[in-house]
Length: 286
Image (cartoon, rainbow, N blue to C red; front, top):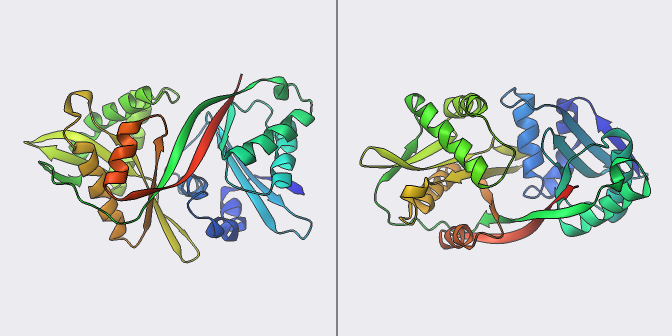
């Protein structure tokens, strides 16, 4: 196995097209983030774009890390994951953690430990599990209010909800200033939607950049957030269904992630027609 760290995101997108097309759901995060970086929509502290080739020079694995977040690793052969772990020790020894399926993570961490690098002596600890869902048949809930795209004059209010969302899910802290930049771009792109009741925003939902890989179009819903005082009214279900329908009308297969430990959100998504596809584990290195 040959592991390569690619400098250019555009080159990474081109080299990994066929690999990602073979499993468009599990590679969607990598594809959508790479697209956002290549277009300047999103800027990170630093980016690492990885590919793993077999002896015939075919791409058999890909991975991504955008600082300050974890490395994201979709399914790949065990020996490819182990080789990737050994290369991480040489080229990205301070990574904070890894997210992927259990079999891939076990092999990657095994290769990382084999390297005996300074960073590889840290202890892996499971931080959370996320469930990957894909829409099967959309069921639109009957809920008071209506869905619409977020407006420019609502950017501050929506950005504050993004800050609160990140705090609740225990992601790296998001400042209001950074949230304003991201929300401004998303509102301009038409990718944030609100559920409105009596003139007030009671829930929001967005979607990542839509990824077209060969003949497959994949769209990922998220984040979805309902302020605490507006919960248990069905607004989160309603705005999720609204965004989902918008994406279906664009010809996309629609997916989303949710916290495996949150039975409320998992129940909501199943009720509006999403089916479980996979489980991902987030490991941090202590």
